Image (cartoon, rainbow, N blue to C red; front, side, top):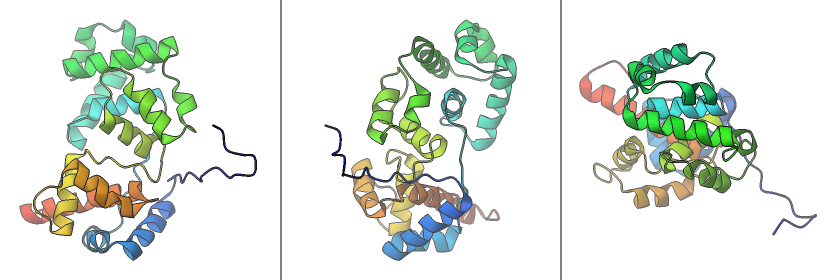
Amino acid sequence: MPPAKNQKRPTVLIIETEDHIRTGVRALRRKCPILRHAHDVAGYPPLRRNQAGFEGLARIIVGQQLSIASAAAIWGRFEAALRPLDAAKILAAPDDVLRAAGLSGGKVRTLRAISAAVTSGQLDLDALATAPEEHVHESLRQVSGIGPWTADIYLMFCLGRADAFAAGDLALQIAAAIAAKQGERLTLAELEEMAERWRPWRGVAARLLWAYYAAVKAQKSGAPV
């Protein structure tokens, strides 16, 4: 049922600048000692905004479960092989061309599934830019190979939704546990429950925890933070 004419739609916060990150961090510091500690250790996290649409979604798929350096190298080869990148070129490209860029078989299948969904009109990425988060999740997860984590990352980094959160992310589960002194790792349900107190800035909380995770790893390894 659509909202009544005199009823305001809920405001969707969009992260577009470093100032938005700082505003979110200040709000989180006031309400959560766990994130206050994370910020004291890691400082302000980076903006991390990527292009929305087909290229942004493809880049998330390519970079899954890889280091930043490896993901950038594979993306560079992949994008160069199909430049200018679009769904039709991925559908037409032979498997050996895609695999030569460094893509696994699973990622090739997912990229082809996304390309087919976009080409057929099943997936309208332009329309998702202003859609409610639940609709974005549902639309993306209808495509074979896209799960909750991919949808969450697209919401956070491509659409800039300030309250999007990837509770299934391993690094976030570990970082939150360490910051909260609750063992080595939280479960998905435990992190979801903890993150409720971080609304409407859960996307900033995630960035802050990722930065904290990196800082803690660097401290343990003796590398400069």
